[in-house]
Image (cartoon, rainbow, N blue to C red; front, side):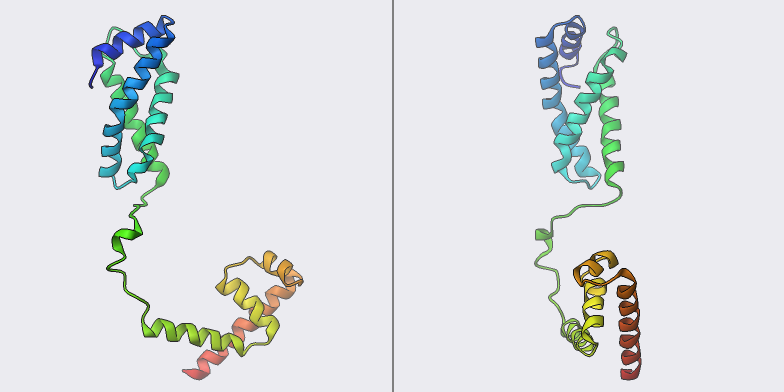
Length: 181
């Protein structure tokens, strides 16, 4: 790693109590680590914007584990090991999700088709055929994604009454759909 001998000298001075040397050591490490971490995050399909968080995690680990560094050995491999594991930890935390900005794909995302628009109209028309109470419950839970408890509170109904209205409303929609096909 860049600055290995200099960082080792700074870390030795820091372990001896020199705060200015420690501050300089961490700043220089951060500056050298940023491009390496950014490249590692990019290669893994992660958002390079998370780089600073990972660099800070590395510096915290260096701070907490500085007593484990053997000052007779090079500091670069010790820091590289910490950095490697902190990048891996960050990637594990985010899971296998790959983040791609939607702006990159606006040109190729298809517009809504006539079938999708007609389907939305059919759903609206079917809901309108339900009694108002069932319609409100089905719309809130099945379309808007509101919980039963929140729907009950919003519509001034008990949770049991909401469940019954939902069951009846969905049953009526299913019956209507089977008659149409």
